[in-house]
Every structure is written in structure tokens, then in C-alpha cells.
Length: 217
Image (cartoon, rainbow, N blue to C red; front, top):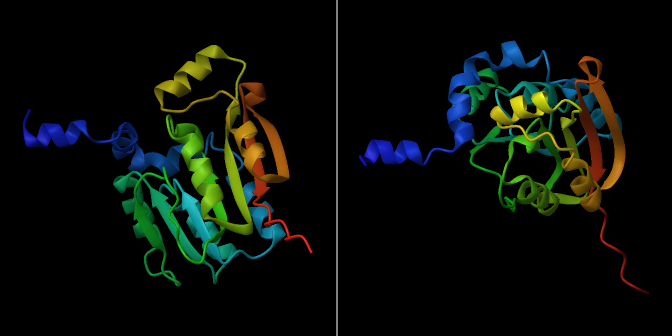
């Protein structure tokens, strides 16, 4: 095996997938990635987070909106795909404060200081297969006490053919995220909405990391 072929074999499947999709992502995903703007409005209704991480930030659509909603916040975008991050960097070039970028998987906590007070996953967790459990655990570790996790993602479908089609596009549609989120975070907002007449449902979830218990007096 040549060095080039060995390097190609080590590329994560999602990185290969988004090399093909990065340039058309924004033109196509609006037709089925529902609830993204609504989730950010729900976050804004709860306050003004100042240290925000988006995991799976893609082409930066949500980061643009986050900058509008929270103009003074420190924003970080993390994605496994360099092609998607390149789109996001161009979209947000020159914004202030400057955006922080991380090209990596989110399979362990970042352990930054101060910790984040908002952590966003927008149609990302269902594509972490394996890895969604590790990402949720990392989010809990990276959030400050009282911080929010905001998730919008596919939830379930009664149509096996659609489930198989999404699996071919690296999406697991099994209703598996909600129990894991509820087991770690205090639910502050939960919606499960129907798309295309019930072909699938999608999830909007806001959860809060509990404050540590007060020591006994």
C-alpha cells in the first residue's frame, strides 16, 4: 500500500462524505433539516450565553445566527470535516470577536477554561456512529454548572425504507438520543415534531447541567 493510499484509508467516512457535500450543503439541507432556527430562538429566550461551542458546526449557518443573537459571546466551531470548516471560515471571516475553530472528532472533553455555558448539536449526534454516547458525555464534562445543551436532530420514523436510506447517509434514526440526554441533563424544553406528514420526527431538546449540590451545613 502506498503512503497516499494508506492516508486515504485512514480518512473518517464522514470526512469523505462531506468532501462531496460541502459546496452544496446550504442549498440542499434546508429542505429537511427542520427546527434549527427555532432551537436558537429558544436558547435566546433563556438568556445570553457568553461561551458557546457548536459541535458539528458544518458550513457555519448556526454560527452566523449565534453571532447575531449573542454578539459579545466567544464562539467555537468544531467539525470533523475540513471541507465544511473551510466553508464556515469563509462565511465568518472578519467577524468579531473572532471565531475559534477545531478540526477534530468530539470523542472526549475539550477541558477548556472557562467551561462553556452553551453547547449546541444541530443534526450532528445521529451521525456519530459510533461516538454519540461519548459526545454526550463530553458535553456534560465541558459544560459549566447551570449550562445548557441544545440539540436538534432526527428522532424516529415508522418507515423502514426511509430509515435504511438515512443509514446510507450515515444517519442513525432509532430514537436513541432522547433517553441518553434526559439521563444526564435536566430537561428545560422538549419537542418532538413531525416532518413531511409523519415520514419522520425530529427532536428539539434543551437540557441543563445541574448545579452541584450544596454541602451539608
